[in-house]
Length: 338
Image (cartoon, rainbow, N blue to C red; front, side, top):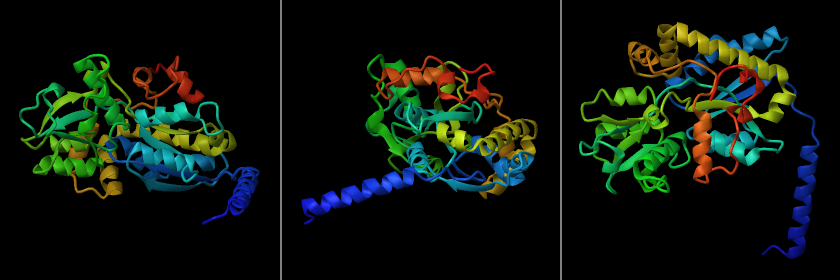
């Protein structure tokens, strides 16, 4: 067993090492590590990668940028990676982002949104013919999503539950939530025969599932929030932006260019998506998904303040932002967000 004296010595050493690392100078600009997840909403990232847009905008600023891409599933894993310093730019649902923003406000690790991945609906799907509304779920139904409760899908379901069952009932369906990445959840929903009867999904997975006659839609996130919502966002720390202004600007400019390009070149964007994802889906099908009239291609957050108000109301975050600008960087503030 470790003695008290040994423990004290180890603690002092840890504190000394922590002080030493804290005193190290900021990392030189030129390296950008980005995390992404699953879905066609990440197509702008695929375009940025395929066309070398970050590198292009870096060179315009006199900077050679090395870009490293990593794939994670779930906002919790993305947030952990960002706080650990393993990535520089995170991408996750607005729910996990707001959770981290609330925890880091006023600290050196405070996070803010760089831009949204456009407005796209999330569908609650089921293969249970008896489920027409969320009031029809029973204990025998399990609802899959990337991370139970705390993902953007989990918060959407809570918001819908509060609307359906009344104030104080936002968490009524929490026991039915199951953590499973979108690709696996889609496969389980289509195959049937498992405890998973439902999936709170995104594109292209929800579009793929709805082609199966056993699967139908229960609700859309647009129904729940009364209009378009940007469910997923890219974000970083205030510290990273301050210490790496050229790298940050190169990323923002590339993100903006890619988003506009996807809107104007959906067929080519679909081909890039299939190539980068090594997907077996037909590019024509992906182009159809990208052409959904409900999708909006914009970096400006929409519906996020309503999302934040809800999370504050149920105690998921302590702070109640007065404006969507409270948790976004200045580059977005000239637009009409919400």
